[in-house]
Length: 304
Image (cartoon, rainbow, N blue to C red; front, side, top):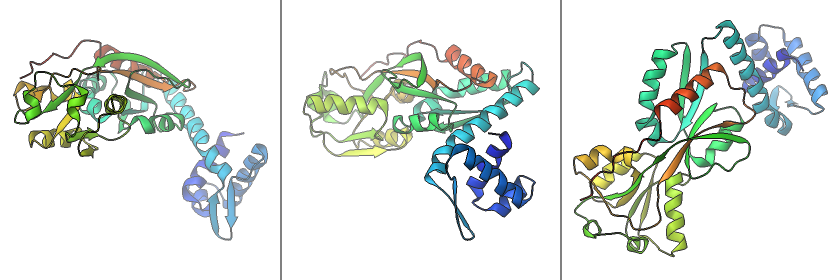
């Protein structure tokens, strides 16, 4: 299997047109056809269906595509590393939940830009549900993940810190006047929650299910900022990381309720695929994240 074959396959999988593919890879159409045919013979499976003038990926082609992309990306990163010597360079694709992207990563990015100006950082939001596929297909090189334990055996993980999770609401809500709030107290209460797949939301769901507690209306949001706006409007209770609501708690815009149920706190890990080649740029970002997002605790803001 040759690099040229993978390059042509990758472009043809995008274009689904032999003529445009030949133009993009700077060769003649007959060469595209012969290279794809040789690749299919080596793999023992057709990668494309030729339907008259139409071209479509076969099931085998769709399954092969992410591995071809991974191989080409690794080669590109390796070439960049060799050309740049010891200086990290090239792209690094990083996934993280919105709360970490917004409130944890900006200091990392600022320091990283100063130290490694030739690295292109690409940040993408993710949920637990999408993380595995994005790391396995190479859409992400590294990810920050909020969970109690990383159980998938194909991932390597390093713990970074624990995140405090607060149950918050507007001080005008009757439940906010309770000395403590137990899971049973959430029965019938309107909840403002992150989307399904969020690690700390999943912990609350498990607590309520185990204690057979049925909350009131649940509104799901893809944005923690939208949740905060709704909390400020007295629309319900929310659970959010302390770092996300630190400013509002300081200004007494929200109240952190005294949660008496099982802990909702959650760990943050940096994660990558065990078979992923760790480029100098990836190693530099991983090490700086560990250095910057240490285990120091967020201040325990006074409730009330």
